[in-house]
Every structure is written in C-alpha cells, then in structure tokens.
Figure 1: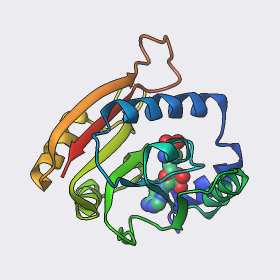
Figure 2: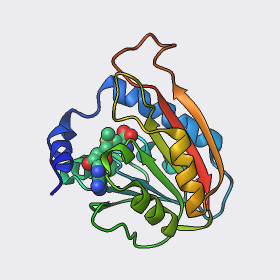
Figure 3: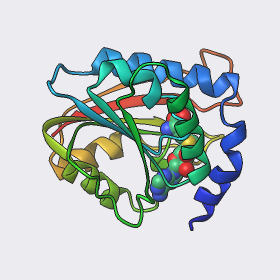
Figure 4: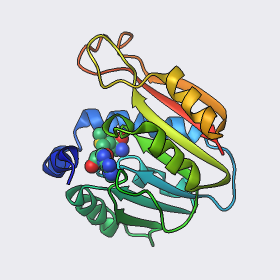
Length: 197
Ligand SMILES: C[S@@+](CC[C@H](N)C(=O)[O-])C[C@H]1O[C@@H](n2cnc3c(N)ncnc32)[C@H](O)[C@@H]1O
C-alpha cells in the first residue's frame, strides 16, 4: 500500500475538523455553480475521504460513487450513508487509483478534490479520468495553488495544458479560497477547475 494511503487510514477518524468541513462546503458550492445540466448525471467522488464533498451532493446527482484507497475513510463514509434516513443513491468502492483507475461504469461527472497532489503520474491519471467519462461529461479538480510556503501546490496553467492535450474542452478555473485575503498563512489557496469531455 502507498505510504500516503496508509497515512490517510490513520487520519480518517480525525478528518472531519471544522476547517475541513468549511473548505468542503466551499467546494460543494463551487461545484453547484459550475455543474452543467445533464440527465442522467451519474457522479463519482474520487479520493472522497470521509465524503465531505460527495455525500453533500447526493441531491444534485442521480447517483454518487465514493471511491478511496483508504479503507478507514470508506468505513466512515459507509457509517454516514447508513445514518441517512432516505433511500441512498450513494455507493462506495475501495480502489488505489494509481494501480488502475477503471470504474464499474462510465460517469457523467468526476470530482477529484485534493487528491492530484498525492499522485505521482499526473498525465496517467488525467488520461484515466478522461477514459472514465461519458462524452459531454464534466470533470472537477480542486487543488491547492502553489505558494512559497506550499510545495504541494498544483500549477493551474500546466494542468489546463495537460487537460487540453488529452482532449478536455471548456476548461474554466476559479480561486475558491484566497489565503492572502483571509490572512491565513496556515492554509494554501484553493482553486476549482472544471473541464468537459
Ligand atoms: C486530502 S484527502 C481529500 C478528501 C476529500 N476529497 C476532500 O476534499 O475533503 C485525500 C484523499 O485521497 C485519497 N487518496 C490519495 N491517493 C489515492 C489513490 N492513489 N487512490 C485512491 N485514493 C487516494 C486519500 O486516501 C484521502 O482520503
């Protein structure tokens, strides 16, 4: 197992902090702003963690597949799904996306929030994302922006060129959390990027 997945197994019970919940809410709001109408619209939240994004978007999609490599993260997602009173349109899948990213079916929406910086081969995973989308499907990538304090950040311009080379279109980008504006030197700025197949 990759070291970072093992790290997330250990982090699972402590992941739902007020800050992570607040950041996920910004992501959910941004996905709602950029989501294009599509019916049916089957979504997957890849590297879903405790489901702070996917589980808060269940009403916006026909189905939501929550995928993660860390079984402890998925245990928490499954507990949250069980607690829901209405019939759930959510399902979970344990998968290390660096080994092989083949979903049970092609999706209309793929969400990859704060996962790309953990993946060593960006070109491979971006190609896999493209192959797992239906034509007209939509990709959302949420990442930390590079900064002098944050070497994990992902360069938006480089990422959009890679996506465009793979065949993605309609690439749009927005900063959803500006650390300078918030006087926050602990957290990197975050952006959302959306693209269509
Ligand atoms: C920083 S958390 C983000 C969780 C959630 N997407 C969010 O934005 O709150 C990264 C998640 O990606 C998962 N992850 C990282 N690399 C992965 C891989 N290669 N395959 C599957 N999951 C992976 C981790 O287990 C972890 O749950």
